[in-house]
Each structure stands twice: as structure tokens, then as C-alpha cells.
Length: 237
Image (cartoon, rainbow, N blue to C red; front, side, top):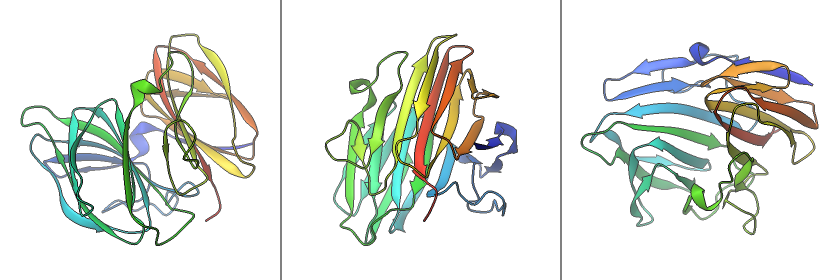
């Protein structure tokens, strides 16, 4: 087993006034040659967006883009004709494929929007762009890891063009469990959203993360009331 710990305070940081960003991997003006990606996981941005501000219309292609609002709501528009709000408690998946334009704004004029934006490199290029949202409370089970993303349309959660599986969990203190890797050769990137947990032998606090490779399963212990995001992703791309 090989591990790399990403402490919250070691992330790249940027304050644009309207946007306060924390970058797990090199992005925008933050460049760290030792933190370019974790396999196909290219972006994990932890953003706070001020009321009534956001990202103007811009293009993407050949990227799987996953947005998880943690509080507040996203006002989304795209060139496929979608115009909607994505609320805290939902997940949005967008396969940019052969090309798409979209905008993302804070949908409130009074409250900050806090979200994770995650980009994965796809296993198929130039597909027809697609868009999907779903409510996580339709999947969530307290004190269990529940699946929110997979490569399979028939599985629980949203689906993407990549052999990647995402799980979340909300755990009481002293919960113990295990996670087994879904595909041989994949790695696991775990982010503690809030609380404190032991992942294997490492203790992680809020917004700490760990990348794990060359393993089959790993022990997880919630040391407090804890919320966790796990991303099981290919390491070759």
C-alpha cells in the first residue's frame, strides 16, 4: 500500500473577492508539479462563491464534471438548453464530451454558496454532451457508505464516462467499516468533508484528504460525527 496525505492547509488557495478557492491539485494560478492529479482525478476544488456572483459562460470539452453543493444552490445554464438550480443535497454530473458551454452562479442574493467541483478525465472522447442531477437523500443511508457515481447507467447514483465510483457517508462517532477497491489498479482518494476519521493508519480532520494506491481494502473509523467523500478512480490515463 502507498499513501499520500493532503492536509487541508497545504492546498493551493486563492481569494478573488467573489470567489474563495481551495485547490487540491494545480489549477488556475496555483501550480504545484507534485500535485497535478491523482490518476484521472484532475480537479477537486473546494469553493465559496459570494451571493449573486459566479462563473460566466465558458467552454469545456472531454471532461467529466461533477458538482456537489455543500450549502446554498447553484444556478446552472448550458448550451444544451438546461437552466436549473442545483441545491445542497443534490449532485450534478456533466459530460462535456465534444464540447459544451455553461455558466454557474450562486443562486442566492444573500447566502454564500459552498461546493466541491470535481473533474475527471474520461475514458471516451468526443461523446455527445450530457447532463444529470439527482437528490442524494434518495441514496443516503446513515452510517453506511452509499454510492453516488459509477460507470454504469443501471447502478445507483449518477453515471459517468470513466471506471470510477464515488461514495459518501455520514457517520456517528466510533463507526467502523471498510472499503474495498472496485477495480484492480484503481486508487482511492478520500476527503473528510467534516469531522475526523482514521483511514488506515492516518488520522484526517476536516478537509484533509488521502490518496491510496496498491491495495485491495482499507479500514475506516469515524472518530467524531463525520462526513466523508470517497473517489475510486483509475490511475492510468
